[in-house]
Amino acid sequence: MTNLAPPSRFADGLLAGLPIVLGYFPIAFAFGVAATGQGLSGWETFGLSLIIYAGAAQFLALALVTSGAPVLVAAFTLVAMNLRHVLYGPALMKRAGAGAGRRHAWAWAFGLTDEVFGAALGQLARGRRFSEPFMFGLGLAAYSSWLSGTALGAYAGGGALAGWPVLEAALGFMLPALFLALLLSILSRAQLPVIAVAAGATVLVTLLWSGTAGILAGMVAGALAGVLGIGGRDAA
Amino acid sequence: MRLEILTLALIVGGFTWAFRFFPTRADLSALPQGGALSRFLAATGPAAIATLFTASAIPFVQGGMPVPLAMGTVAVLAVFAVTRSVVGATMAGSVGYGLGVWLI
Image 1 (cartoon, rainbow over the protein chains, first blue to last red):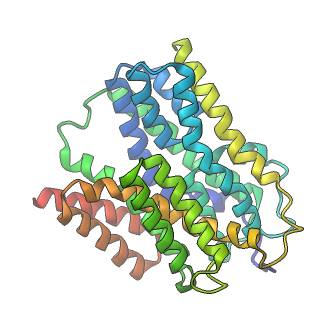
Image 2: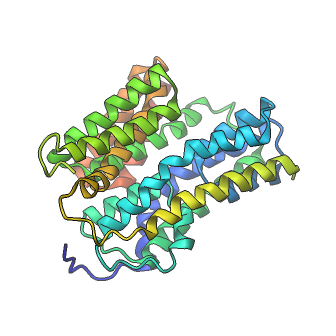
């Protein structure tokens, strides 16, 4: 695929990261509040966000740590939960096209979270040209928001939002709202079967087994629907 | 920082970085256009985003508050349809949901 768009700059990445900044901050804030509320120190809370940088895994880490699970059991439960990330790199680089730079991928790929992957893919689908500075900008915006939200939440301490139930509810809906908006940004008629299969498999496996299994099942089932050409060869 | 928390963070963080980085090194140039693996990778993006939306929405559906959920969802759809802005749609969804909670 030939892309005649100008090279994307670091600043373009920062700007494209704005929805993630808005989505991440309240969630990270909620994580900081929850972690300190469950007995972690401010530095431990911040350290989890700094080193792991994977929201769902961090919330599960809290549950595992406070339930007294052995470190290795907890660690490999969380590793299994993050296994889905292996799909993102090849999917992104394929969309970026032949010759896309990846010399500094060891650094920007640290920030290749679910939302950063979704936003990058959305930008490429809308004609944006892949570049490593763009990925650094996108990743840095998201990471900064995640860290600052965590720090503020940890500083505010457990129960900080208890007196603001409407605000707490509104902030809690940021993540599904962000994913829905990202989904709309890449939506095309040809992709509807893939999306329907992924959503159906997620619901089914989540209800029958677990949320983590549901996420893996949804992604794999949707991608397989693309392989099988459900909805036409262009469904992917 | 307790040693067990640091150990946990380093193991999970290390594996997560590896999951995110090493697959970007895969050489995809030899993949035949329209081949099975090529289609699998192309479908991964929409499938992943659809999955993550569904997974994040399930607790809200199970929460038994259909009015805020409907208001939040409609707000995202409406604002995106008008503005094509992911930022605006995300914010509108959050405000719509909060408004729904406030109303009930």
